[in-house]
Each structure stands twice: as structure tokens, then as C-alpha cells.
Amino acid sequence: MDLQACKDLDFTLGITIYMRKACGLHTPQASICCMSHSETGMLDKFMDGQTTDVDADFASLQERVRGSNIDEQTLLATDYLNHFNEVVMLLQMVPDMPEILDEAKAWAPKSYEDHFRDSTVADKDLAIGVYPHVPTNFKLAFEQTIDQLNRLVAVVIDRLERLIEQNDPDQLRMVATESARSIERLMDIAGGIIHGSAKTMYQAEIDALLQD
Image (tube, rainbow, N blue to C red; front, side, top):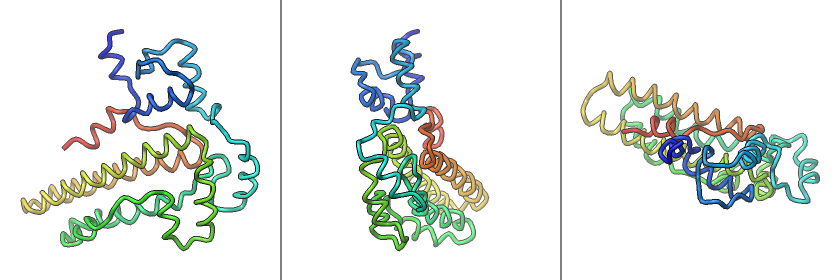
């Protein structure tokens, strides 16, 4: 298979490169199709949660989060996604209230730890404390997906602002609706990672969502 074909199979936003390093794979190729059979098998285990780079205190941390809103397998909490629910709600209202786009523009990315520092949930300190111990495969997939969400929100806001300027209410409604669904789709992926899936979105899918 030629190099371009290999590149076409790369994981989202360079995640393959990070995962190769996390698995101890230091050869320069960045694509799964460029890996040896043994390397591919190792990466498959990494993505399926079998190789997690768990620290020595992981079992005790699992005990600490048991009964909380933090997932025992990943040490991640879904409450973080409420940060994105806020902007999705605003974007869905734009067709009927174009002026609310200003509130959406005031929305800003927020790190996982900062979200919980500003939160009032009961487990906020626990969520912050265990975050450095999230297994590598889940943390990489989660942070890559959050980065994609942040970029997608910025692209959507820019699209909607231009449509408002063009005074095209039908197109505005269609784009706002479809864009909100795209953000929610990525949020579903992030939610899956929080609950134990290390699967992410392929680069071609991300490119399609971000295409202007």
C-alpha cells in the first residue's frame, strides 16, 4: 500500500502517533496500515482498554470513586459535558433569536479541571483529584475528542454569524440544526469514552464536520 493510502487511514488529529508512543512504538510511520502485525495487535489492545498504563494506586482510586458520578473504569465524569450542553442549547436557539449568538460567542473552552473547580457538584474535588490518574488510552481519546469539540463549536459559531449577516433564515435554521447534531454526536463519543470506550472519530469524519 502506498504512503498516501496509509495516510488516509490515520486516526483523528494525530492520535495514532500518540498511541504508538504510549504503547512503546517509536517507528516513524503514523498510520495503522504502516505498522507490523505485532504493532497493530498492541494498538488494538490499547484501543480496547486492555493496555491502560494504570498506576499503582488505581485500585484504591476505583474504591474512592465507587458510588459517585465518576466512572470506576476510566475515572472520568460525564458532568464535564454539561459545559458543551450549554453552548448547544444556545446554538439551537439562534434561528429564532439571532441575537443570542452573542452569548454563544462568549462561551469559551474550559479544561476538565477548571470545569470542576467552577462546579457545584458534590464530587468536584474528587473528579479533579483522580484526573491525573485516568488510564492513558482513555485520557488520550478523551482529550482529543474534547479538542475536536472545541474547534467544531468555534467553526459553527462562525458559520452562523455569516448566515445572520447574509439574512438567510432558512439556511440559518438548517445549519444551526445540523451543526447542533454534529456537536452532540461528538459529545456522544466523549460520553462513550467516559464510560469505557477508547474509540474516537476518524479524520475524514472530522474533516467533514469542520469543512467550511
